Amino acid sequence: MAEKKVTKAEMKKLETRKLREFTHSLYVQAMEAAVKSTENERGKIQVRVSGTNYNRYVRFSGYGKSCVILIYKNGNVGVKLDEMFHDLFETTIFEYTSDEVIQQAFQEQFAEMLEWLIPTFYENLGYDYHAFMDFIDWEKDLFKAHERIEKEYPRHSEN
Image 1 (cartoon, one colour):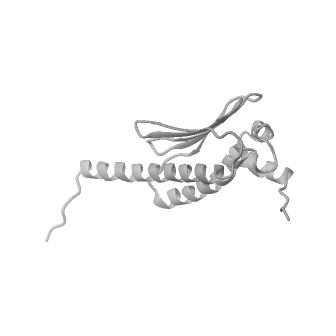
Image 2 (tube, one colour):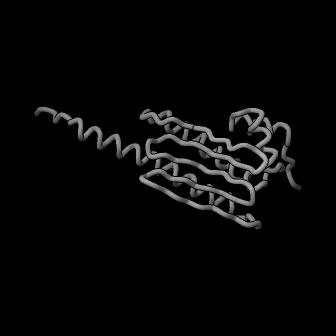
Image 3 (cartoon, one colour):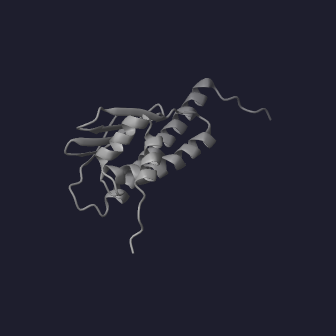
C-alpha cells in the first residue's frame, strides 16, 4: 500500500496547530504563576490579561510600575518592565523555533523565570522593584540582572 503524501496545506495546518499549542502552554504557565505568586499577597494586586489575534499579554501593575509578559502568536516571548524612575525595558526572551527540544528547554526556563519575576515585582524577595530596575539598567539583560541582584541581596532563611 502506498503512503499518502502530506500536502503543503496539511503541513502548514499541522505547524500552525503545534505553534498554538506551544503559545497556549506558555499562557497557561503564566496564568498559573500569576495565581501562585499572588496567593499570599496582602497588598493591592492588579493583574490584567489581554489578548488580540492569539497574542496574549499578562500585565502586573502598581503605582508607577508595571511588568508585562508578552506571548506572541508567532511563538516569540518578551518581557516589558517599567518603573517611574527608569526607562522602559523591553526584551525578547525567546524566538520561536519548531524544534521541540528547544521549546521544552525554554518552557523550563520560563517556569523558573516566572518564579522570581512576579515576586520581584511584588517585592517579596528581599529587594524592591526599583533596585531590580537599577540592575536591569546596569546589565541590560533580564537574566543577568536577576543573577547579579541575587548575589548582592542574598536571601536569609527564616527560622
